[in-house]
Image (tube, rainbow, N blue to C red; front, top):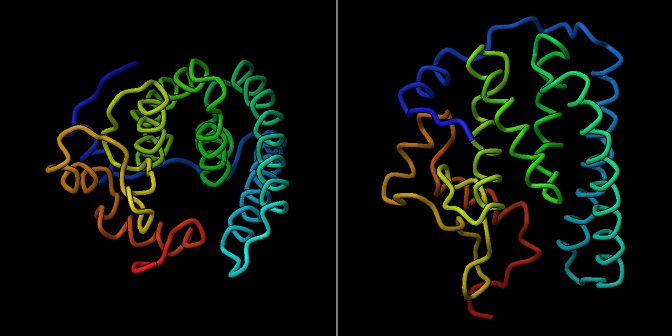
Length: 209
């Protein structure tokens, strides 16, 4: 996997992405958007099911199965897109649809080799300011965790020992995590944990329980 420096990403985060907002390939953008809509629909159902005051475990299991099914279908479609177009940058499909493809890449965990190929290709687009550096940080962490390695930006989370809060999975030099996140345009780890605890509160125990 290609390497980079924090100074490089500081520049990217400040510079932002400077490409056309109008997708050149409308049909591809529409396909990616449709795939992402299904991805997010079933994940939203799963999150809502888990956040119910009274959990219906049978309903949760059905949602989990739907998520897994959609992920398997989208993996095949993402491979076909990648084989034909490479990593869809902003100049090809527009900012929103390029972001959506990154989200699909995040969920290609069933094929870590392919996921890493997308990461490398995304890196090339980020160097051209044609993909979002923040998205790259998430995918880089995802690939690292899936490879059994330490993550860099603390984006991949797990539930802590007493199940009362999310916490980052093991990472490189945790004492410097906020500095690295800032250089990528990400918020502090404290705020990220707070947001995760709010959004996915249904999987956590209340303190004192």
